[in-house]
Structure formats: structure tokens, C-alpha cells
Image (spheres, rainbow, N blue to C red):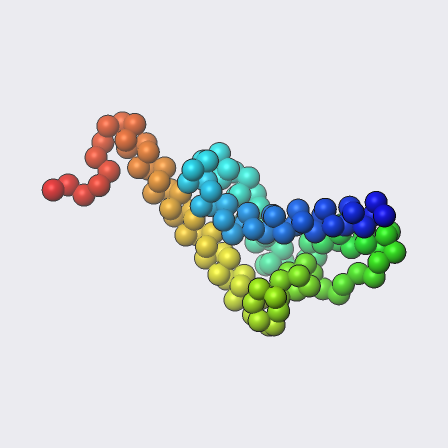
Length: 130
């Protein structure tokens, strides 16, 4: 029973990490120190996608499921839990591109917001001059 509960906890944490990957850059607009944790998550995901190795978090969930007597799913977390549910089958490469685009948009906004705050602190005008 404990193994299945651990597997479920890992599954939920994994989902939270993926959600944070998509929205973390935007959250850093409000809480700037989050950007460092988010950057680590982004690098982690980028390496997993580019190098195409299995995610250790997925492997951990599958290990706990096996220990709990459950059969494990084939493939990765995204394929099992998200593909075909949040987006159509076979569209994962597009979902990845959109996710990374949202990261870039979040980072661009983060730097604009940070520049605006620093300029305000220095007493500079941030907007267009009229």
C-alpha cells in the first residue's frame, strides 16, 4: 500500500514540476528569486528533450508502482498522462515547442519587469517620453 501511495505522490509532484516549467517564468515576475529554481527545471527539461534519455522522476514512479504490485506503463510520463488527454495523440513535439515558447515569453517578461523595477528604484522614467 505504501508503495502505491509513494508512486502517486511522485506522479503528482512530477505533474507539478511540469506545470511549474510552463508557468514558472511568469511567477518569477512576482517572486524574482523563483527564476533560479525555474532555470534549473528548464535546463533539466531541455537536456531530457535534446538528449532523449528517460526521466529519473518517471523511473522513480515506475519503481514504486512495481514494488506495489502494479504493472507500469510503457513510455514516459507525458505520453502516459498527458498525450491524448490534454492534446491529441502524436502532438507532443508541438506541446514541447509551445511549452518552451512559453518559457521564453515568461523570461522576456521577467527581464522587462525587472528592468522596470530597477529603473523605478533609480528614479528613471520607464515608459515612452512625451
